Amino acid sequence: MENYNKVEKDEDGNKLYFLNGELHRTDGPAIEYANGTKTWWTNDKLHRTDGPAIECANGNKLYFLNGAEFTEEEFLEQTQVVIRPKVQEDFSRWNSKCHCGAPAYDSGFSVECSKGCK
Ligand SMILES: [Zn+2]
Image (tube, rainbow, N blue to C red; front, side, top):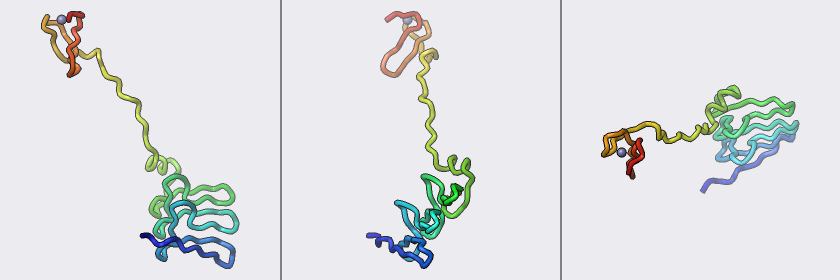
């Protein structure tokens, strides 16, 4: 069992989340500053995979993974799931030969003759 986060509030009103003595929170920002800035930490490192690890109160956003800073483009490359278009089966490519001698498409289940015979 993981220890629950220890939550501390410093004298400036900043709220800090700890796990085992390290800045750590996975379900939200590990530091919530009194001025509205939020920062995400995992194991004492700035880290967030689903958005900027630093969201400044003034709207600035900075991206970090395991303590290393990335540009937004780099960050998206690292974290985005790339959805590729479905590969269409190519029926125009005759890969076999029918018993009549004409080119045919063998799907593995059946052979389709290019001249249409059965
Ligand atoms: Zn045929």
